[in-house]
Image (cartoon, rainbow, N blue to C red):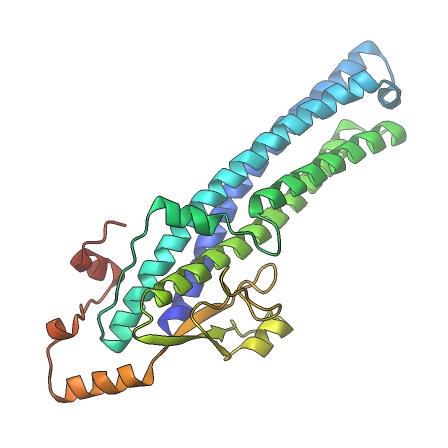
Length: 303
């Protein structure tokens, strides 16, 4: 297994960890909505009114729906904040880890680009398929609010009890969480791929191209399988040289593809000559290390 493949496996673990954090956010929001629903049923039970009267009273219906929209808006804001931070962390991690991979695999010194907040923000804000993830989150939040309204209307018309209504509300929340996890996987893989591209472009003196690598298993999409092994210029799939449909990363939601560096042949030849002449590691700018942490410490990297 290559270092890049191992990185993708570890990335999936980080994505699932992020998903658990999202699950907590969604569960708390769902609990708040269920509290509103329970309170609604309690008020109708106390007044002796039938729940169906709710749909004929616009002000009362708007009141409960307004509370739910507020809860979901706050959920969307929290989700976006968490994803922004995870995206920035993954982008930085990818740049540095893939530079470490190059240095250790080819025993050649690498150039570490300056990673600052402006650079990170510029990459975070790049949209995928015409939409930034913040807009996708807002759209999904609006859809969830509409689904909640449908549940409450159905509950009133069909005379559902509070347990049935709560079950339907929780189901819609769970479905939205699954969608949020799919978005996170897509975006964090995009962050990792953009980090790779940034690392490779900073070392264009030794890296000539990048190769598309699909994660090959039963879940591999046809477009990623078809693109597997193809090579591209270092600026490919960037704002300056946008990727073609079916040949970009991510290619689709839940995409797990990644890039691999292609070292220039003349660099490989030079390295072979240097080794044959027993030119030292220090003269080649190569920092040997058993782990990324050890390498980062030697390089003076603080994160």
